[in-house]
Length: 230
Ligand SMILES: [Zn+2]
Image 1 (cartoon, rainbow, N blue to C red):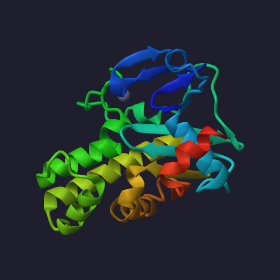
Image 2 (image 1 turned 30 degrees about the vertical axis):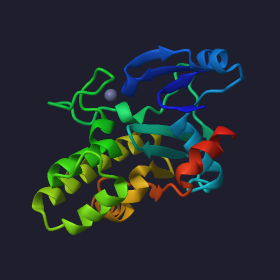
Image 3 (image 1 turned 135 degrees about the vertical axis):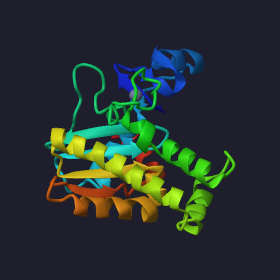
Image 4 (image 1 turned 90 degrees about the horizontal axis):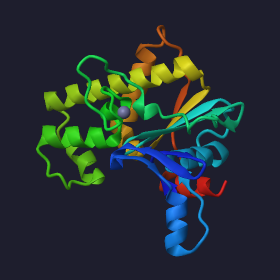
């Protein structure tokens, strides 16, 4: 089973999106369905798949970020997934990037990376700026952004989104020094809008921070399922 939250010893911890601190999910599912299951974190599985078959296969030290509802992560050092003794680690989504008047996060802190750069945050902000209904799907959001590029408020927001994303990535680079960072999740759908701009920002700031290769996840939505059996 693939889940959000930190998976450690078949328990799920800190599923902030659902407001849960710890859940013995393996035991619960096994008792209910009477089958043996294994619990895995969705971002780490997608990262494993990208490392073995996708965008990160040529890199030994790499970070995978799954930008979706939140921001999940997987870190690889010398080719191996980083598995700390304590908790699951690589919870990059809860790295604080805005200390002063940061947006409150369900983890209890304020200013977490995912409150600014998850695709949920991005979509909600774009919908607000363009007055789109709450139910607008990703494909239509992309079309609406393309049609409204002359709208200053939208352009300013996209600039800010890229600045925030760059801060988060630069922090990761300073700590891990990966050879590559792969961006996955629904971020990939906004490739033409966000990825291109991010690469421009990396180029602009290259004298300040030597960024590694920033690549897009290549296995799409199947990455999590592929990684779950690795
Ligand atoms: Zn948080």
